[in-house]
Image (cartoon, rainbow, N blue to C red; front, side):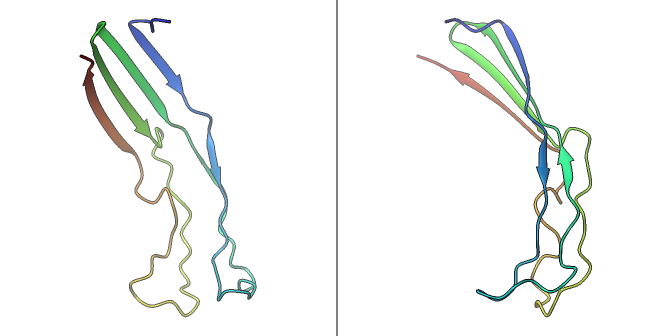
Length: 99
């Protein structure tokens, strides 16, 4: 079926809760759990003509800051201290032409 000229989609909120990993087969150190956080994403698609489609995405719409774990638990300086979502809000735009 043809899509409407302008379509908006709000993705299901994403809730993340992470536990710091430990050595394989060993439990993570006590208190190594990061708090959960929820992000909202927005997707927009517009078809100005049947062959053209313009689209965009905003991930982490409200720029929710990911929880930070300030402890390294013996990690090296190059290991990150936080998890997915630390980048903050991201935008992407694109266009598609169908032959």
